[in-house]
Amino acid sequence: MKRERERTAEREDLRQRRTKKFLVHALLALMEERPFQELSVVDICERAMVHRTTFYAHFEDKYALLRYAIGELQQEFEMTEEQEGRCTGERDYFLAVFRNALTFLRDHRKLYLSGITGGGAALQLLEDAVVEKMCGRVRMMGRRGASVQDELSARFCAGGILSMVRWWVVQDDPVDESCLAECLERFLPEEGGVPCKRRDRKM
Image 1 (cartoon, rainbow, N blue to C red):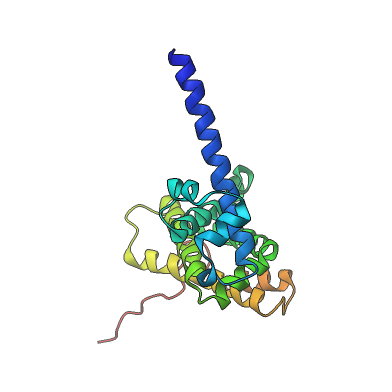
Image 2 (image 1 turned 180 degrees about the vertical axis):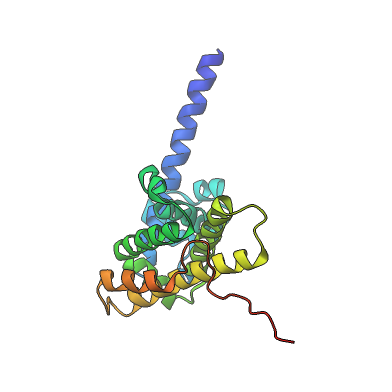
């Protein structure tokens, strides 16, 4: 009896994951066609071929679905174990994230541009999540007793990377990817450094 209940729970869990997958794919496809603000739950359900009652069994509203979809998209920024192993510090980590971001946005250009033209609310959620992930990762690999200055340095670099990539996408590849990467390497501080060092005041 217990085993049968477990199998039933597994089947239900599989159906839930499949339904969420359909809804996410429908949302992302629609966002490439229209701004997020113009989309309704009905639009999403019709595209996913999912009943509205089923939608509300999984998500409170379209914003809850968007947050879930962003969590799924964020995984594409995650580094593989091989990439992790090659990162010897914060600088290597930021460069690896930059390359992943370029690949992601090249593959999802229409979605990204739709987020911008739609007011940027959906886009901001994704960017905020990525920045928090990047800063958290830097804190994990950082020195003991990391200071506020280290935190600001991490956020400065994370925000700068996303700003560069956003400009590159919006301007429709104004420069080659290798050129963009070379510029970033020059901008990032050397290992253990910070973009802005505090100067002691002369008395």
